[in-house]
Length: 247
Image (cartoon, rainbow, N blue to C red; front, side):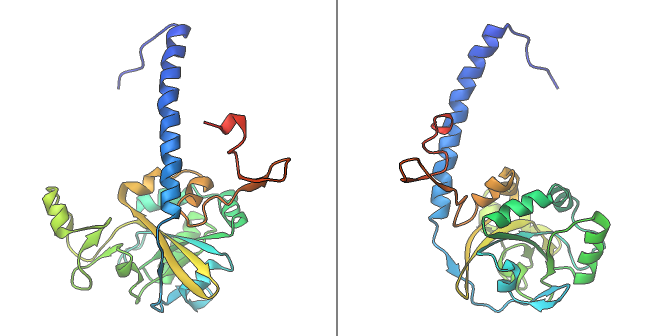
C-alpha cells in the first residue's frame, strides 16, 4: 500500500480545506437522508412471534423492555452451528455498556435475535462475556419474515430488498447456495401503546455504515430526540443554532 505524498504545511492546509467542503456536503446529505428515514411509513406487526429468552417465552413487545423503541440485530447463528458468525461476533464485541446506556437514555432498547436454540446463544454469550439481551426465534417465522433466513421452500427468495431475478440481472448468484442459510440485518421497531410497528430495516453493506449510538438512533423513527431550549425559550433541534455545528 502506497503512503500519502509528502507536502508542505501550506499544501496540506489547502488540500484539507478542499476536502472539508466535501465532508460538509456529505454531512448535509446524511442529515437530509436521516430526515427521509424518519419519515418512512411504518407497518404494524400483527403476527404473534414467540421468542425464547432466559426467563421464558416472550413476544416482540417484551423485547422493548419498557422502552418506546427497539433495535434488533439479526445475528447470524444457524441452529446447526456451535459458534456464532465471526463477523456478527466482532461487531457485538464492540458494543459497550455505555453504548446501550446511551440508547436507553433515548428510550431505545437493543437486542440480538438469532434462529439457533437459546442454549447455544447463551453459551456463546457467556464465552464472549457479553451483557446484551439475546433471544432465539427458533420455531417462529421471524427470521424468514424479516429476510435474514434464506429458504425459498418457506418464503420467496429476497435479501436486501432484491429478489432472485434482480440479483441475476446484476450477474450475481446470491440464491444458489445450499439453503437455508443465514444473513445479517438490523431492524427498528416503534411501540405505540400496545401496538408494535416496524419502521426500518437494513442489510448487507448498509450494516457497516453505522458508528456510535447517535448513528444507531438515526436509524429509528424518533431519531436522536435532542430538542433543547435556547435562552429565548424557543425550542430548537440540538446543535442547529450553535455556530460550531451550523454547517
